[in-house]
Length: 137
Image (tube, rainbow, N blue to C red):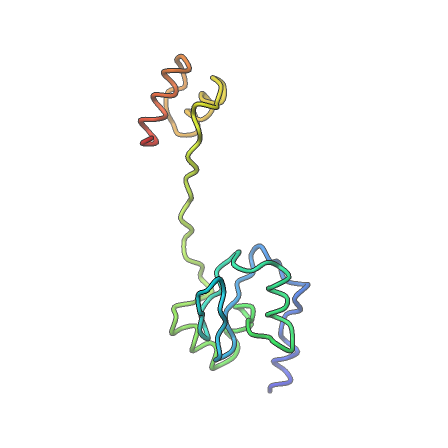
């Protein structure tokens, strides 16, 4: 059975690093940016560089595994479930980027008003005030 599981383990270079999710696969855990992650916890996206991901994923270390593969291993699946890690990804909270309104010209301010569903007519000063009120700046 162990041989079959090793054969099913995805090759690192075949993984899409933009969408792949990794979990800690070893009981000893892993420390990333000063925070310790235990077995079954998800590695935060972007916490490791692609090279570091490869080093931690490949043998002989193999301290992390790709989530879909990890859920096929009994003990690791239970550890993932204990930490609430599932294939269903949590809804991503959109990050709001606060633009520097003083650097934008009238056309850019007008386009930004359209994006936020605001009235895009008026002078530069009026558009900046409208956007400032809406964005809470």
